[in-house]
Amino acid sequence: MTAVLPERSAVALADPAAPRPEPHPAGCPCGGCAAGTGAADLMARLAAVPGGRTAVVADGLELTFDELRAGAAVFAARLAGLGVGPESVVALCLPRGAGLVTAIVGTLTAGAAYLPVDPALPAERRAYLLEDSGADLVVTDGTTEPATTARTAALADLTADRTDRTDRADRTDRAGRPGFAPVPVTADTLAYVIYTSGSTGRPKGVEIGRGAVSLLLRELEEAGVAAGEGRRVGWNASPSFDASVQQWVRLCRGDTLVMIDEETRRDPALLAAFVDEQALTDLDITPSHADPLLGLLTADGGPRPLTLLVGGEAISPSLWDRLAAAHRSGLLRAVNLYGPTECTVDATAAWVDGPGEPHLGTVLPGLRMLLLDERLAPVGPGGTGELHLAGPRVGRGYRRRPALTAERFVADPSGVPGARVYRTGDRCRLLPDGRLVYLGRADGQVKVRGHRVELPEIEAALTRADGVAEAAVILGEDAGGEPALIAYHRGGDAREMRARLARTLPSYMVPSAFVAVDRFATTPSGKLDRSALPARVQAPAAPRAAADGDGGPRGRAEELIARVWGQVLGAGSIGPDDNFFKLGGHSLLAIKLVSRVRAELSLALPVKAVYAHPRLRDLAAHIEELTAARDA
Image (tube, rainbow, N blue to C red; front, side, top):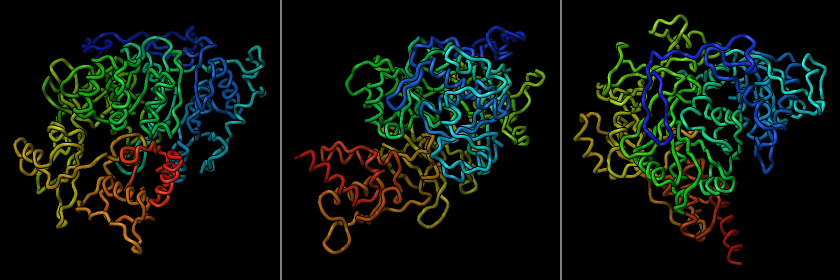
């Protein structure tokens, strides 16, 4: 089942029996093709981009496509000299920047695959990724301990502007550098390995082939998600998450990649200003981060040539309506993208341009959808089932995990020899027009008083209540230590929600407790972090009042911070030596804290100040310094 997504319109499903593109013959002039998909390989497309265009913007510097290709050619030649080639895995332990982009393109130019290892990860986590993947080489920027015994090389050495004696050294351009001559590849040649969390607690590496990545870019273009020329694409995702692939592949069609630093990413005000300063046309973002950003982007009521690529988690009805209103008003465009890492980033797309129930749209052309019930029978319109995906963008499997691969990548019931289907574990409902509505995980079940309960069903009911922007339900404990459902919600009235759920759900599915929160914690990838939700709810004590000699906060600034911390953290006794993050603070609560301080003191406090001064006393002193400088 395939789909074409016209710009700013609904989508229609194509005939599932439509013929697949014919494989390209050996020696195809495209310079290495994704055989069997009809999509030119990424490096072949990159080679055709005019050299004078700006390829990368990072740290105030610009890199042209000629400069990017030259640097990548040098990098590839170095890798070849070290014995790296097709099916080799090069671990890139590099921060976001022009160096990372050059390393990715250089690795692919050499025909090898890259493994992104975020240097911000704990050393133990980095070591696990490198050991489990069996990486052939680790590239660092020289400042990060690679935490491995594998071969290690510094980026500066691999991109030095000189020609080594290798079997590729004779391919030079006029400047004497190794020419941009990508190693020929096939559709199944490994492109990258990206790790995802595992149900057993051990992360697993997903292997994706070159043909799948090439086809992803072509489908984004056909769907209108990547349309037109001269686009400026913000790289917002961590390189360790597959959303980053969707961003860097845009280089291969001639778009400019604009790197967003960590400080800007975590501060909505800075990010909104960055969008305007850099004239971004495309920004990938999760719903949790889109929510506070949207108001800033639309506050002036002026249109922006910006497309928000929203994905990574379900969009709430409230956020969907706001995005749709902005889309219809011409302020910006928004598209909802869904897809598991195992199926090359994006599997479905839907323009958020109309009111109604949030939905995923339909599958992109490189994949075929199967919605199956518990008996593995196809589900018709109106029915629900587990989403299975098939087609040339389904990954190769889990690296060095044959048993797990066999469990999740199963034989295609269509009977095509060698074809496989990926079991997503996601439950969906099929609408009459072929669109999909996401219902949650198929394994999101708990037992409550002997009854099997699907938590996503309760959450969906909560988000349909008036004023509820987001909701999450967990199985925790009540005051007596007994198992109980706890509902966390942003917005809405608990009494009204309880009455609504009592009208629509069995009594055992109505949560015992409703806890209002200002923001939900998120994981490094921007998704809702369920593990951060307290499993046992306790009413917080009133924030401790300041008094001489009792160790409590003193002065206006300390009293203000203590009060605001109590509000955003739900904490009671707060002292001047308490640490915001040790009390449960996180990025979204830091945003809330800064917003309160700005409102009460009319002070432009940046979010980075909370990270730089996490102790209450230090943050208060910093605020006093800023206030004095402002009033001087």
